[in-house]
Image 1: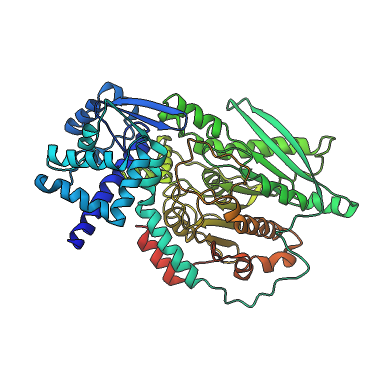
Image 2: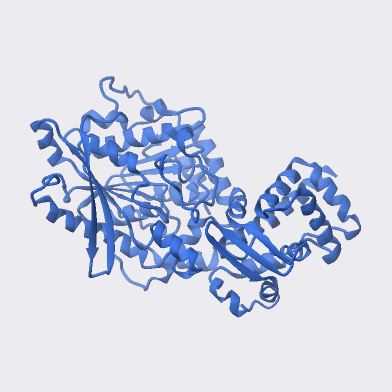
Length: 554
């Protein structure tokens, strides 16, 4: 009986996980359909759908008029999920549910389902499950919703997505690989860290702040930019500052230019000028607007994969002009020697600017043939780029001479070889508990494409999530708050590491390279590592781990 219950729970997890996934991607159809109608809530977004329309789709595969807006998400896999049944003898349905509710896994499932359906109780959920089993001789998504009491059922999409992400296969693989990394990548180097310098400490320069709004009339884009610049106290430091690289920070999908504010302040305090750009087509304002207006097709426009790198190139053109004009920024904007720092979709932006080549053929193949209902949000978001017209996109800007890609959204965007053409230094960050861009698919495997062991680095946060490196004061948008995150105090050491490592990485491009080289080591990473959030830094994956990553990512 115990083995049967364990098998049954596994099957139920798959069904309920799929139920949560459906809700997530249609924003108005998954996780829990109800008596007559289902209302999906996702932050400020809310929409109601007739269950009969979903039943028509499940039966015929044709989309009723009211579901046309969700055509991109109602795939054959979703239809199969809606028709899937978990078979149990109807005469023993009540006993099965009672036994299920006594197991730890069953309690977890019912508790998760209770969070997805506001106002429900464990008893009402068990009663609904029992009724569903008796009515349709099998538990299905549609059957459950039809059996739930009331004419309308409300679903909390955020919790539904969070539940489905917990069981995302790629996420679970990344977590397992992270545990392996923690064991295998213990530092064996004899690097001695200097005692008279700590790159994670703030510098001695006061930080000046300037906010600009730039207008690119050719592309009809208004681009806000925040400039952080150090105020050098001595003439010698002023001359050094002129020679420092300029840093551009590119935020992720649904975020804004304040996402990495602490990092910008840190670098500026060391005399490195930082320009934090905001991309108008994929920032928090644009994403919230698309969600509130049910405009799912415009949630991430295909051309944003081209516009984002071009935003940065346009910014550099404008800063070149500003650098020669009298004012507090004169001489501080070295736009000919740039390090780009990007998070998530900004990580893609960074890699494209240093020579990563889009591979639309590989991406379309994945999105057409391999994109399953249980895939992570990053896998779905990348598929927005399939709407681009074929072409040889050259997004590289030779002024950008190094890149820091933090939890980058990569997946299949560059295919199997698109990153191999990069010949500039790259630092990449992966979090093993990142449910939005799972590390195996989006960081570990793509990292193996990069060449030059002396110019590439992979920092892994064992247990880190997608937003672990965000500014503690940054307010996450409701639309993008869909997974469990480790932020704030519990990831303080990771932010400290990012400050120190980023500074050392940037300084490697200057005449101070020898001073900061020891901090580009596994020894430094482990000096900041904690039991709760272990950190590992490598310049290449060992061959056994590389093969493991390639196999697990298939």
